[in-house]
Image (cartoon, rainbow, N blue to C red; front, side):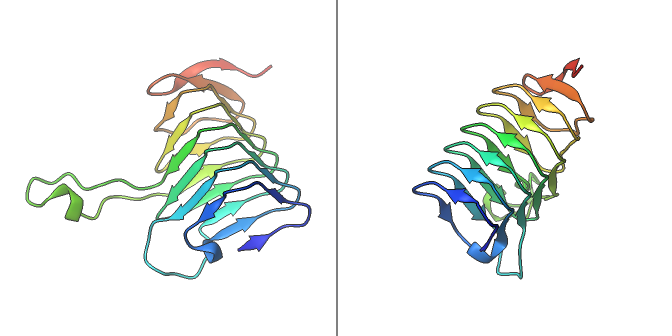
Length: 158
């Protein structure tokens, strides 16, 4: 695991493949965070977190492809980031199918509220805000405020 200068990691943080995680400088991670790289062994990192990032307790990163989190992001408690899915073909059991996967990107200065779920292929633009409890399944432009299930635009930052 790559750990930046001045980064604090709380108790009971679990990491399935430490070499897949890179944390920037001056980050703060609360307790009970789970970094789960859900793939076969590969050189890392696939979970890349910038500088001055806050991650709240009970947040989970379930990553098969990659997640990139920019600088100065705030991620509240209970969030989930999942960059892959199961296959849905009728010709095979769901559990044995390879599903699609695609990188998640949070650009700089993003605020994610409590219990947000961010799904595969989503980019959240610089300065965007996602309201608590939202499910994000499509890209969010810079400086917009989104919320709901599925998430939709509810405002702009001023």
